[in-house]
Image (cartoon, rainbow, N blue to C red; front, side):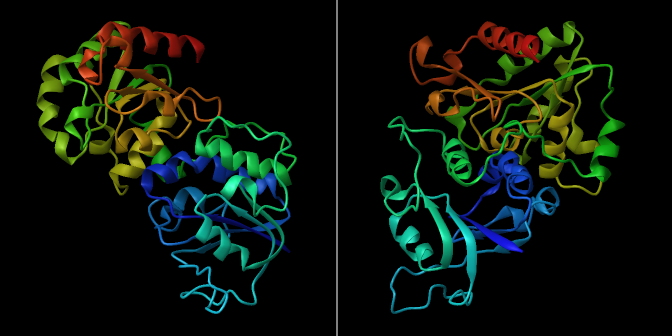
Length: 327
């Protein structure tokens, strides 16, 4: 069987989730290939916390391979890669030393955008000078060796065990708005009063609010309960699955989600529901709406600065209504 190697510098949880729809395409793009995924020094959550979501799409994982660019040293201090061979290697990162190290592994075809495609066996006919969202850059490399005609908005597969539990929580005939009001960075937090105001508005429209609270946001629970009729907290009701797995799977049942620019907003970026990120000090444009990721953003910049609380609740409500109308 042919083999293809996808190389990255690692996938922490947020990045791993953003790449999930891309991972789900691999078997469709390369049906006659054994899929190998390799990280250099970073962790690979496809081998741990997201393993249930990627088992069907990745055949072999080489984690923390610690590649070496120097020809007089071993290619890897962890694996014996000297005799390995791949039909295609796709380098999804851009650090030149790692690319040089990866180039030492034998292959028929090597694809990399590092150093303006200098090391690559082929490159796009037209190289866009505008910096792309990095997932788009990876797709561009995939397209060089794959004539894929499927949807770019591929839906991830939710494990049946958790899916069954969530079907008991969410009513198929109702609409749901996911809300993640927390962040580990205080200056990125849109005020909880504003979130509740948005939740109340849509609750009156018979769209039920669904809250995702991290360990540092548990004190918000009584405030939410005191102000809303029937808020849902899925992580409290699902058994035998982690909070992370519950949040990911819950997006299948949401009609829209809103969140601060935070780790949980990345967890909500599954492409199973539209997501609106509320951005203050971070650059909203890096979340520009993309048909592949279905991510929207609202930035505080047009309202006078980097303070996220400059964003009016009316603006968020209007954006949610706009997204709900499209979906």
